[in-house]
Length: 300
Image (cartoon, one colour):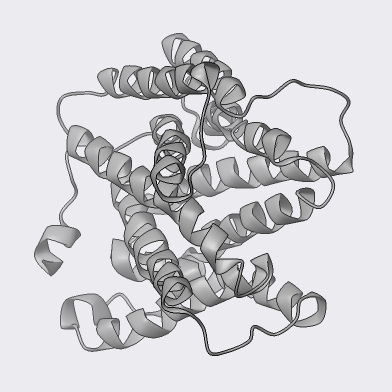
């Protein structure tokens, strides 16, 4: 298993793995809804990251292939991606205090617009015009699935726009760090440590301490958020960005919205109208279009 994780996937395999990760994050929306019955959003994020970190460190130290990468250089290498990941969650949570869930959902996905331009600025990657077409199609799909109607902007919308910029920065900075990453698993564990710092710093003064004991459903939700959404899904992201451009990764991330709607339909009883299902279809179509643009072999 360790050997398989050490080898880089092909571009098409990486795309399939990211689709699987998007399904995990989609289910993570349901788990987050359940977890909020136990703790506030800052405590929920702090617990998910540090539970994953505390579990993973002994695994690394007990595995020689991983332990060799458990060092100061890799620890600080993960700082910027972890910081941007943390900022994504914090600014989105703060924005929800002032704006609607619908507007938050749409503004957050604007990261797919930011990513190609950050790639151009930081990685000197040319913007593919066909990819921009898929981006615009996906944005229309996102607007439909969120039932976005526009309107005047407020302070919460501005905070959510910062969230979108943080999300795009996490994706692009991760690609920038990829050549220096020794182990995707170890790097992701370090990233979870950095990602938990801001939520726990905000949780202590601003949210009540979670109360125990907790129900079996909430325990399951926290375990899924920690081990599936955090350890496994973000590990897949790190692995995938060894062979996929940031712009493609950001498109595949959008699939978490249709997956979230599907899981909410079956598990939370939420229903979507025709236009929302059309939006989900457009997102899927755009993601598949982005995958079709990938090279057949792994880049050198």
